[in-house]
Image 1 (tube, rainbow, N blue to C red):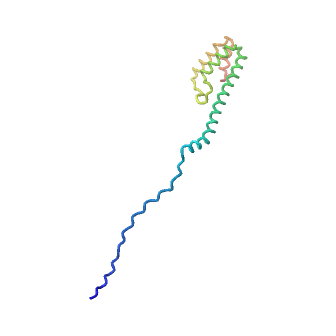
Image 2 (image 1 turned 180 degrees about the horizontal axis):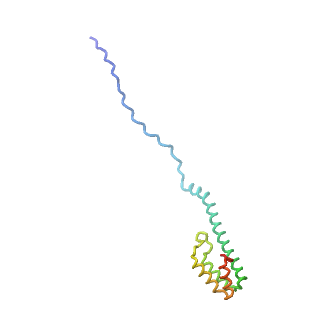
Image 3 (image 1 turned 90 degrees about the vertical axis):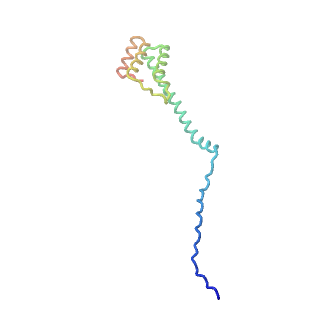
Length: 141
């Protein structure tokens, strides 16, 4: 007797294993020399501008102080030694013109003591005139 053909049985396929995720394309690795070159092209001009502004600010402050002291010298009949003392008082009180540390905030009492100290270096009449000029607002510094 002949065998009967078997019924076709639905065959189940085994599920495929998930494919591994595709790695992103490798980014080009920059070495430290390239990073320094890029920084140099950007950082050097910026640094030069900052340094230039720093020195220009100090020079302008120094020129302003020189002009102010020369006006005081003629207005209040000051000698060269008094002018050099006033220069030092101004530097101690207001700073050296460094844009990072100036302007220095002072109280009204400190400002009055500052003006009184400068007036003491002048003759009595010129010191009184100096304080009167600052009190009236004619002089500013």
